[in-house]
Image (tube, rainbow, N blue to C red; front, side, top):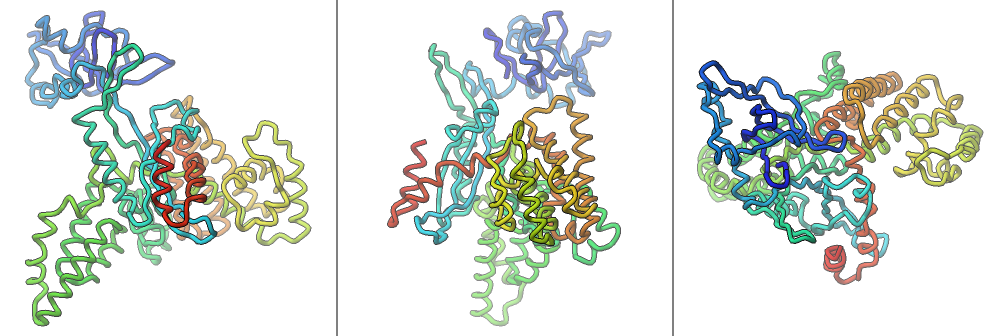
Amino acid sequence: MYDAGTAHYYVNELARLKNGDFVVPVRWLMYRGNAHADVFIVSFNKTGHATIDDSKTIIITAADLSENYLDLQDKKLIPQWSAETKKSSYIARMPNPKREIAGGDPLYVTLVDFFGDDVSGNRSKSWNKHLNTYMTNQTLPRKLLQQEFHVHFVSTSPHALMAEQFQEFKTAVEDTHSNPVCIQDENGKTTRFCIYCNCTPSDNPMQSEICGHIGGKGNKFCRKCHVGGMQLEKTTSKGYHALFEPGELRMKEHTLAELKKHVELACGGVSKHVQELQTQTGIKDVYTQYWIEQILARAAEMRQQEPDVSEATIKSELIQWPRDNEEKLYSPFLTLKGFDPAADTPVELLHTILLGAVKYVWHISHTPWSAEKKKTYSIRLQATNTEGLSIHAIHANYIMQYAGSLIGRQFKTIIQTAVFDLHDLVTEDQFTAWKAVGELSALLWVPEIRDLTQYRNALKIAVANVLDAVAQIDPSKIMTKIKYHLLMHINFDTIQLRPLIAMATEILKSYKYFTYSFFSSIGNQIFDMAKCLSSF
């Protein structure tokens, strides 16, 4: 919706420009600080009938709009539509149904990111896993998203899965679609907004869980596409080459359909059939798996009670319950409107780039070094002029001493200085890999894309260079390390969402839950964590 002050313009509604032309806005966008609209042009034939030309869009300045759909209705200026347009769905969507729930107020959409991560609830070094979830408002300016103040606690539990915690979040989000949140500004003007889930940035295992995916160790090891297969298949020329390209993208509709097959097979009481299908498709949802195991357990009980009972008989008795309780069996991530887990779990910079590509190249570079080479590298690194680099103070001796257990911020230091410090300490192939990873990192840590076409081309080349360089050093890594293949999806994620730095998880991981988790009382950590965090 575009608020012109005295009129509200919605997408999929007829509107008129100041020059008298009719258009149908399909999306709103900001360009050079001003509101614009992507619109379909409405043309008239010789008989005066109007046709919506949806073959292409043009961009107009929103300030050029003069009358919205309601104005045109009042003035009886709605044209007679051509037979072609009547057959389409455009007319049925006018006026926009959102007008009714807006109640005359401006109505906007707020996009939020939902993030989950496991932390310890103990003061000691013992690991006492708690899964915390948070959200951030992605409609805020990016500089504000780097402030902990704008990270909001949602829930925590030592037992509930991320999908189980997301269920209540989903309920609240869906409620705003029919009952928008109403707020009032300092002048008493009311505005309403609906909430939609933008994406779920997390580490790769958690994102696989969100997608209902078997994980990076499976044969079909990519959560975003169907690439992969048996090891023998991946070692063929065709199979290996496929790892260097995005495969057929996974869709939540397909994932849901496969999960329903898993449940149906489980009703037969043979777990092997379910496992074979999970291995074949790469789909294994931890949320649905609980119910599959319950169904298999019930089938085993029936066999114990009646040893001669057939698989068909067991299936006929068990199949009805899943059909009657579908809303309980499947992950809320797969049923939330406007959210597709495979597309909306972006490649995450910390775990896929810094703790993925950079870490792997660092490992193969430093492990064969002699003590003399380690000393040389430390001296060079410590002497680096950090002016203009977005890094913490350099502690070269620490980095070299704990080279095998570094964290993200140390890899940020390494990748920004590697080509200057490592040129004669590594092999030619390794140095090629460092240059490729360095170029890719420089492209990814950008807050704004000025020329999308140029950026996408540069990104495509940079990703290909990294994969080629790694394959030259150790071809097997492409087959065993899912983080390399995930690089192929960076281009899509950038178009789908925005520059990946906007979904960086460092601010979420450094959120104050660490403090409240660490100093929580021994007797009731989970209560203390929830109470403290909910106050933010």
